[in-house]
Amino acid sequence: MRKYFSIGLALALVLGGAAYWLWAPARASGVTFLTEPVTRGELLATVGGTGTLEPEDVIDVGTQVAGLIKTFGNGTDGKLIDYGSPVGPGTVLARIDDALYAARAEQSRSLVGSAEQKVLQTKAKVDEAVANTNTSRAALMQAQARANQSKRDWDRAKTMKASATISDQEYDAAQSAFEVNTAGVVVSEATIAQAVATEADFRASVGDAEAAVRTAKAVLRQDEINLGYCIIKSDVAGTVIDRRVTIGQTVQSSFNTPSLFLIAKDLKKMKVWASVNESDIGQIHVGQAVAFTVDAYPKKTFRGAVARVRLNATNTQNVVVYTVEVTTDNPDGLLLPYMTANLKFEVDRRADALLVPNAALRYRPAANLVSGTASGSKQSGGAGDKPNPGVVYVEDAGKLRAVPVELGLTDGTMTEVVAGDLPAGAAVIVGESRSGGTPNTAENPFAPKPGGKK
Image (cartoon, rainbow, N blue to C red; front, side, top):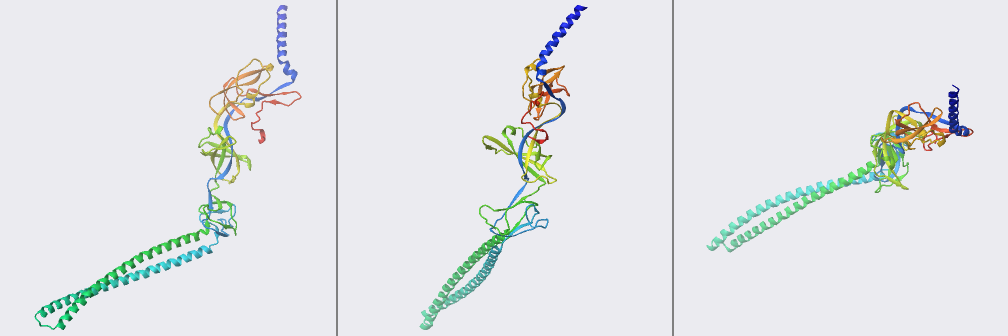
């Protein structure tokens, strides 16, 4: 019996010495291990970005004419148009001094009247020419009748001359009458030709006069349009977000239309122009959910969705950035144009995932504090579906034990454990504290800090 007792005592001394040898460095250095529990919960992986809030639809109101800004109109609230004024379709925004344009329109109106009067006068001349032509035709018919009668009389005179039944005087008279009436036919024909030519000229003049009327009316329409342009109106319902002119200011109209007002069509609908690095753009797609905050309301989270990924990237100092358009509702009007937004694009989500702190994945103790060894990557997983190897450390019966795990999704603070001997509630080492010193944790300098501090 004494023999077995001696053997047991010797074995206890050996084991106690070994334990002392293993843990003496930790005790000697006053090391206390810091732990956090393994939990279950929802994990959301995101891609970050910053952007600027813009109205979903902005109307740039300009002017087609140059002149002096004489007055501003009134918004739908009855107040003078200014920054933030509500407007509707047809609301008068401003009036340009129209004296010059009104005078031009009046002059063009007078020219139209003169041109129309010219048409009436020319048409009257056409009617007169037609009457003259008809008269000339009647005269020709009479001349032809006289010429025919004279020819018959002269033919009889020639017959009677041969039989000496008329005198020479009567014969000469018949011949002269024939020649005169024949010449009268020629004259009448010439008169008809002249009358027809005159009628054609007047008809052509009518066409020219009518063309002049059309030209004058076109000029009048242009002048009336320019006169109408002196009243600057809104074509849409919205809010004036920028007024770029003042009363008394002269605006010039040239190839580039001057911008007078910016109107946000509907501030209940906003969009964010977000900048996303090329390394993250592959995880962004249309319809993707987005959460964001603004500095004005740091504790309030707004929601949106990706509407478009612009392909014209910018390259600044070898950093390629893409612009992503995010649409969001603004029912309370809290979001204002040009606010800065801090966005998180929701890349992937896990429900009821086994979660381990990333600090535990980064923690590596001194070799003399570990019981045995374990291989594993120091990386904490990613946003993809392919598991990554990792290792965490737990206290087990007074010792540090390495636990290999397979890692899935991460949000930068917590990482999903997809395989490994690590139950929920297990305390994993995230750092160590030495007596007389500050805690030494495996902290990620880029991870979010509590309380919003960086």
